[in-house]
Figure 1 (cartoon, rainbow, N blue to C red):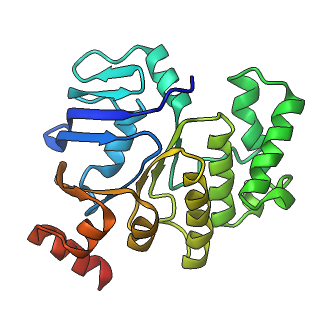
Figure 2: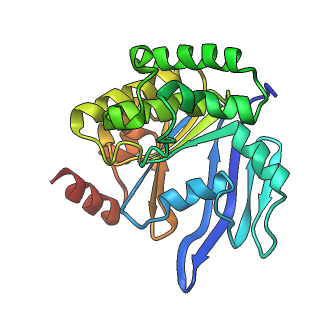
Length: 251
């Protein structure tokens, strides 16, 4: 499937008990676009990523990922639809989620072998290429316990790329890292942007958002309160709520 990958989010509502986490979110992510999702903690950013990836079922609205549609409501989406969306969009989490009993190359090989049916030899060759690309070719045989946080996150990126997705959903993937390690991981994402992957990145790294994002979307209280190009959102915020958020982040 090589057609351009567009994501349309329309009127998405998600509640956890009495708490409304997403309140009628409308977004369009264009093919090859890098979107940075920013805003206060608890604003719904991570939940939105999980809804796009089919990890969280939502209560109302719809999400169209390429040719596949997820509809909100009581009935969960067909499992086949969710699997196809996850092939299009890989997801990377802040806690790495590597298999501790597998080496770096073993982690990257796992899904191509067991999900795609790729031979072990072919999967290993591709995994080595990806690990080299993220700067870890010399750490292929290391176990997660032997890697730094930044190295683990780069293995997680290589693992997502091994499924040849059309885009990546990145959920605060540098939040647990030291500043130097954050730079390593964000540098990999900046490089991937050149490949034309659609990137949706939940981040508090405003410098990264300024350099890399085509659009910044601000979620607060489950609503989109501002969106636009980085220079508009970061330099000329329209709402007092966003100006207050920036003062807190930059303090």
